[in-house]
Image 1 (cartoon, rainbow, N blue to C red):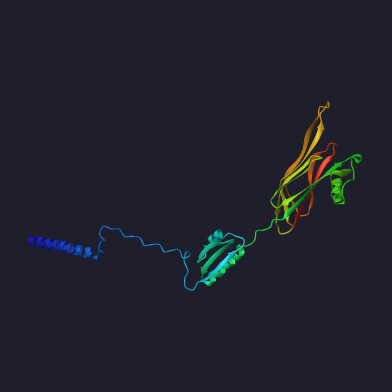
Image 2: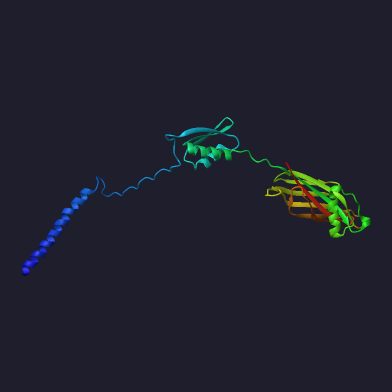
Length: 270
């Protein structure tokens, strides 16, 4: 009985070894030739569908550009699935496009929107009136123009001035975004500012940055040893509506002790 059990166990072990021996050659036969000892190579990545050459059904068109450079525009248009090239022919910038009709129509519309002339900058004119005002009637004069009478009336009511006279007018202008200056050599007034036009839904604004008005006043040194220059100065950033006349503030005191008031007008010239 023990011999039979031992025999059966030995027979089972022999069958298992026989099965493994027959399976190994079969597995080896399934490998492709030269496949032993090599790793599998990855598949190639599919090309970008937007980078492609001409295809059947495409239409071609050459665009002549008038205002923009062809190179940067071609980079922008590269988002479209089209074949795009550019070249310079004498003084002309050209774009050659090959695409299906729907894409070509979209490219043409994009070119029309981008190939436009640069915006022409408008001119800005700034006028600064320097008024000398006093609370004493004997120190005032009525040498102001009619356009300033309304401002003088407001100053009288607000600060109890007896009257105001025009001491100096500074006129300056330049292109939108430019810095301009003006000076009066006789009375030593100077004006400096940068003007920018700010568009809005209502009335355009003129923004004045680095705005500064100076008045250098000669003051005699006691004892007759000459004169010193004392400077009255006003500076700041302002925003004025187109054509509006505003009282900016007080510059200082004049040689006679009167208050120097700045009145500003900014105009946009077409």
